[in-house]
Length: 587
Image (cartoon, rainbow, N blue to C red; front, side, top):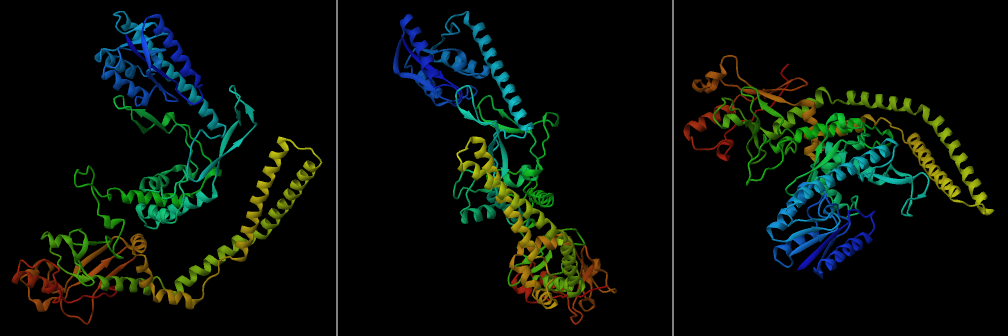
């Protein structure tokens, strides 16, 4: 009878000789029971867990069994096939279907024996319990390491691990330290801060990833050009950057049919809270701003046309505005969005619902006009030279007060620096006379590291002292304010998001003359009309009105519709007949 042999060991910590021992035991059984095994039908999986179903050696074995290349499969014990009872029973049923009997040498089980069913079930249950017990013991050991301040194998961008403690030989004769601790990687930490800052400034995740690849920034695995949207998103959501290193927060669960894993959140009672102040890279303020933007981004991702979305899709304009006031304005009459009704030239803003014939607010206003008037109003009322000069002077005063302690701190750090320099010199003198040991070498390395850190701190403090904040002159402030609109338009997305925080929502209310009721305009006399917009913001109410103009684009729009209903809103022919409303402060 032709037979095949399958052997496996689970981890790199186990000996490779385990495979040879398993094959030897199976070959001895073949010799005693007159079974023939060819070398090509010896299948092995090295350093692969028995809980995995997708194993190269096992998959090749199944394919050969399906092709009737042998009549029996030998294993040292059933745990070599799988540690999962479900997977092991599935494999037994598969081999039975292929009419290939399974022989477990150490267990004394042969599947074509009617009395083997109970033995298979018992061995499968024992093997699965062993795997569960092993997992609990492993988790207990890792939890102990975490509580002692050591790393449990986390590989997080922005951090590195350093071995600490006494170097000892383990049972296998390998030299290992007591453990490893996380430290901030200065270069990677700077990239993390840059990612967060660009994100809260309004840049898209795709743009951030593209910029990192363009700048040839290496990933954690030292891959050039390896940044993508998911990598940047994981960084922006990782609480470790604010010092939260909670243990047992997530767990892996495996699909019993496919063997694929997914990460799920553990119940709060199972988690071990750990806070590491020494590993904080992102401060609380920046973190909260980033998470707030995540909330704003929900529902704005593009959805494939091939499948339906299961969530409310938001307009992309909410997070990536095209113009300064895109997505900020709404109609005071119906509550609908004020959007660009026409795009030719500078474009005209109008009520979107009016275009759909569900709102009576048909007033239009040019995009550049409303931008110019609102920004001008901000400059006249709030962003004045006097106001900004006061703020700059206040900041300069507070900064100076904070730096009063810097000279004393520099003196203290320099004293520590000189002390460590002398300590390093003592170690060197000790080594020169031939007294060298591992402990001295480690102490010297630690002293040199502390020396370098203190030098950087002293240089930083002296730089801060020499370059403390100074309020700019009044002429510089005035020049910046004169070119405020041009400055805002240099980065429309970031500027629009700032204006959204300052002003939004901007509610545009169409206002008419006292003699005319707005809701009776359809039958009124055009000479009586003098409509304009009033912009209600968080700061105050602004009126969109040019005192010198007497006409109204509302009437022109209405008359154009009556003469030719098929003419779409905002066409060039219609827009040329519109009167452009302006703005002034109402109260």
